[in-house]
Image (cartoon, rainbow, N blue to C red; front, side):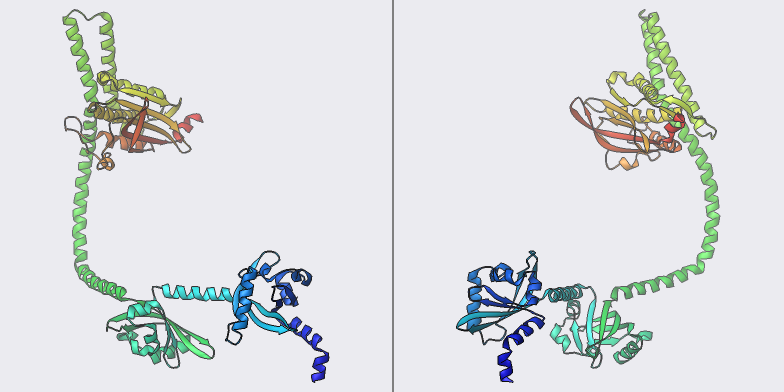
Length: 530
């Protein structure tokens, strides 16, 4: 046999290297490759001729210099008889540049008086991935808000517990691993009362089971839990995984629900009588509310007419008084008389239209009409300026040429309310008094914005200004019905109105004020376009 080995040594070595499932390298003390088996060449992607031209540090990421290789070589020589001293983990680089992790087992040898390192290399990519997954699983288990146990079914011993268990029960993992699960768990009272042997017997039948029990902590505290149990076989042994959740809060809620149910049952005994009484009172209340609703609607209309009449009546009074005074002083000429009478006529027409507008507002058979939005805005401004012309209020208009097909008088009523309120605020201010009106369209709405430089609306009340009878003015100057009616009118036009505080820029200066935005559906314009 010895003669056979001697004669066939080379063939035997070649066969052994070729059949190995590991990459095998021979490297001399200078770091040059002198041999590599087929597995090594396949892993790196080199031919043997190419590899023999390289040094170890050309493929090893960590031993990337001759100095590091010589240091490792000396370490192998010095620690040859120390267990595992010749096993290292490093990374190799393929011909393509791809880097992969490897485990290298090396042996120092002297052959024909020359020093060599023989290395057996294993790709450990899969092993590292498995290790990372295992570490991830353990991190997930330890970060769980539930208590997780692994229990040996045969002897009931706790094999593992996560950090939540240790924290909740006050034991270390070592202490728990010395205990049986029955030492820290006792059964629930009542229908859920089953001990560990019975739990395991049922689990044997079903493989998965939900149970209730009580864990006893190290300091004596008892924690009721709901546990999800699973039976697993591993290495011919049966293990139970238990995922337990603290249900103290749930039990408290159940107690409260039970107490509430008792109260509800008690209440239900007299509920029918109370319902009958409430029905009778509700019918009486609804009858009264219908009457009050009619009166309130009439009151709102009268209040709003008074609110809208106050300005034109004042204008008529001023004009008529002025003309009387001019006549007494003999300075009232024909032109002044004609101008004054025309203005008074306009105001009187407006007073008449106000009554018609509010009377028609409650009629279902009103008709829409076609009007130019620019003309309507200018009419509103003209009516307002007839009273407040002396305040030097600046109006700026940015209005697209567009005709609308809707209820013109109602839309005018809204404009007058908003502009009038803006003027009332500007009266109080010493800064420049500006009202900017912009009209434009977007993909969904036609939009009219009215901004002022009056300082804005307090955030405390801005959400309430469309409420009926809400006002910040003295009773004599306002009833709070104007914006409420405006909101109702815009809703009647199938639109929406809102308010916010915004900045207004005029002549390179910025002023803070309120911005009312009226949005009407595009159909308001499409009806006339069609």
